[in-house]
Length: 136
Image (tube, rainbow, N blue to C red; front, side):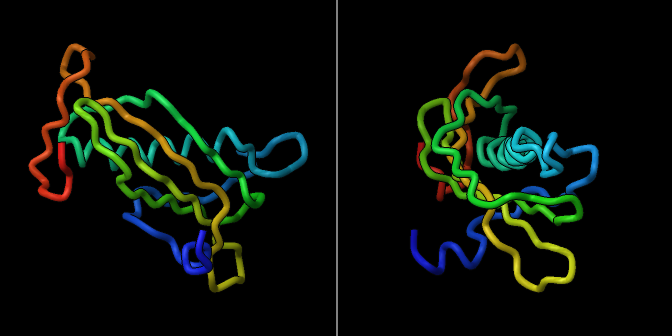
């Protein structure tokens, strides 16, 4: 990863939330599962917008937990489209945290999430985006 990639968020802002005391693990750090769920929510919003349909998460790969998140950190999730298949989209998600009193956010977690476009019956369907940047 390049230096610039670790100093600035890449992609579309999908979700921003505040880490709260109820989200901590036994050590007092924010629970990794909470962070993963925030990334999945943000990625799902991005994937549904790109696919112009409902989407469901089918895979999470290459998760890198780089730094701890603490109570009071402002967590932002950014998404980049990696690949579009016939029925699926792979999205690279980055979670960045901004600590109280600091001016610059830092990368805390990133990974690739794959979503499948589904119809009203929950069955896979072709990605039907009309966005020219999304090649099917």
